[in-house]
Length: 398
Image (tube, helix red, strand yellow):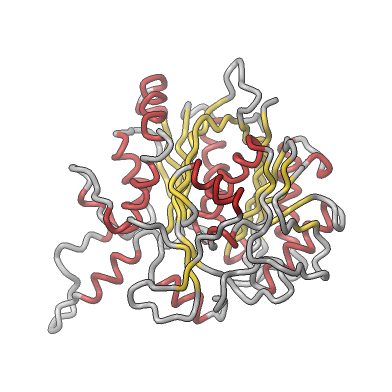
């Protein structure tokens, strides 16, 4: 594929609003996970929540989109001058030539949960002020961002569980290569809600401790929330050496089970192989792998086998950053794409947080501490329920 430029990016999660605090947390090996105190969730687990989301007020003209998910979206858009960067790009390419491609798993489903608490006791009707289309619908966050910037180009939402905001890079790439747009806002937004907390709890997938990816005692995930946005464009004639490029995209489907990966990680391996092939890079030229690394016994085992088979046992340095941020579900792909971009620009391979003793049956070179050295190319993995897999390759321009 033709490389694409990440001309601007930002992220907001439990480890920080914007790039500077996010990088500081990674350098200082701080986790944002705390014991769960989400209203109505009496669960013995840990979560990664973003402070101040409920205090965010959507600006005039956008109040119809008011829900926790879109509040976090607005909070995220206002970090790192991302809003200004989009306006400058729109001034250059035009409102109809900018696309919006965002991933989410549950979007604003919390708004429906709240509406059900206010149902009419006689008729059971939902409250009249509840608007499913603008607050709950998976597309509501893309519609919100499109309206936020006054855009008129194509917009869509991908909701493929935990690979959602990785797969939007593939959607944007196809639109750019087809010549239908000149720039794209890609990313993901997902917020805490009872549906995900109780749903994952019912599946027995929540850990009662901060999650420990690839640890021998790993026993489940910690759910987080995040917003991450990237401005994606064609590569201009000249580039700064520190610029970050999307080099490769790989997508696959396990077609194996509703909620479990193929036990040998065949789908994951196919996604990684395709990403490397589209980037034109051999596995040996990947310096660091940001693992999907959810910390469930099955997922980590399947991914570990896939990585070892493709990259060699104990070969390429890798880690999961979910010990710091929690698993931000539909926002994880975009969040970890931004962390991968920081790794490239800063020469930082973040060591996994909370993991103490790597499971030796997973023959991967898992980093327990940060490693600082030049990083040229990174592979970022995102795998979702139903075996919807996506791997992305990012590289420094110089």
